[in-house]
Amino acid sequence: MMDFTTEQIERYSRHILLQDVGVEGQEKINKGKVLVIGAGGLGAPVLLYLAAAGVGTLGVIDGDVVDLSNLQRQVIHFTPDVGKPKVFSAQEKIHQINPDVNVIPYHRFFTAENAFEIIKDYDFIVDGTDNFPVKFLINDACVLAGKPFSHGGILRFEGQTLTHLPGTACYRCLFHSPPPPNAVPTCSQAGVLGAIAGMLGTIQAAEVLKFLTNTGELLTNRLLTFNAKTMNFRTIKVHKNGKCPICGEHPVITELKESEQAVCELKKKS
Image (cartoon, rainbow, N blue to C red; front, side):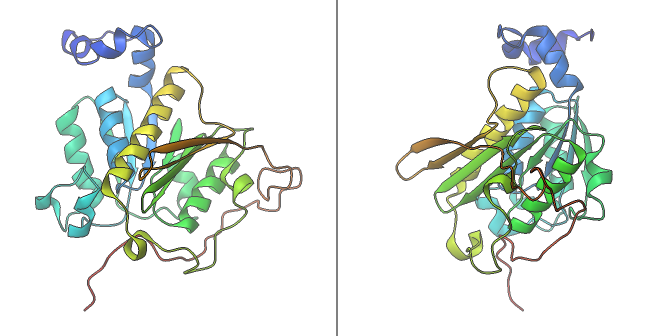
């Protein structure tokens, strides 16, 4: 058992009061190791809430720097952070919220070459990315490594999320492969309501905390979707696909590969 300080007991008191969490659950949170891939729209609320909750180690990987157009939805970054690497901007805010958290920043992009080495020490992976190839790469790396993860995606007024545990439906069970380049618009082409990122990111953070504390029912074998224009939420039952190319009965994907697609960025043209 961890020996919580008086300050920590006060900080986490609202968790400790919960019958389904308590001291034991908070201890599990404090010992948890979570990797968030992407410190943008989804990664921002995920990191903020996991830090506040006291997750012991937070890894954050992102090779990008803060852009002015990010600030409409990426709430972990502030105006003075423009031009700063996102991982270091996020690290500063996490430590301001909770100095107990050990933050491991990776100022690089998540690739087939570094994926296994980065995810190996973490209990749970969060997909906070904004392009299809990396989402499939995260799925494939986690499935092959036996790591649980949360998928999340947003566009315009809509969001979707799915939680994968080993043996449950993965992202490829639903979506076989990335769409062709330019077949689906990015946020810079179609736009996104900033608050949508917060709505979905907090759902993903809740899934992480439920996993760490073994509380409630995770979004496994279920795809949660919502449309903020109507505030309609749907939970769609999905099944592990026997023909899935990576987790099916006869998998054909046995190593990591990458493809290219435009990302959700709005860059100034020179």
